Image (tube, rainbow, N blue to C red; front, side, top):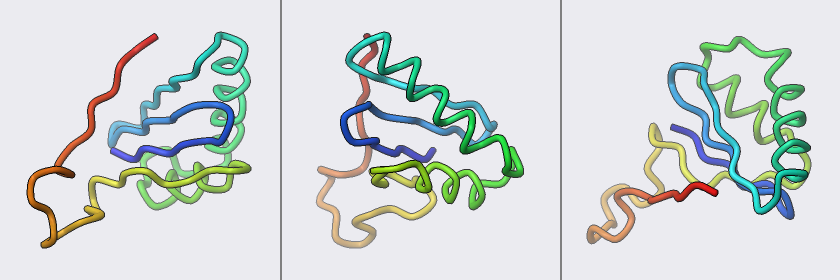
Length: 89
């Protein structure tokens, strides 16, 4: 899974299957962010993790939160950063 935060919009979760989800504080922001994600991913190889990551990070004001293939605290984690929980609106 790849998780990306888009400042002032919300979160994007991309799964290995090529499916993705958007979480935002309002329906308007969710709709806008969904359009941005569709546009970014439209020109990529849908099954390529590297391409999906590159495309999502090309969205303006995007920040990588989690890439399960590259743990952020590998070898340094005391159990606090092994996973993340996400709610739904």
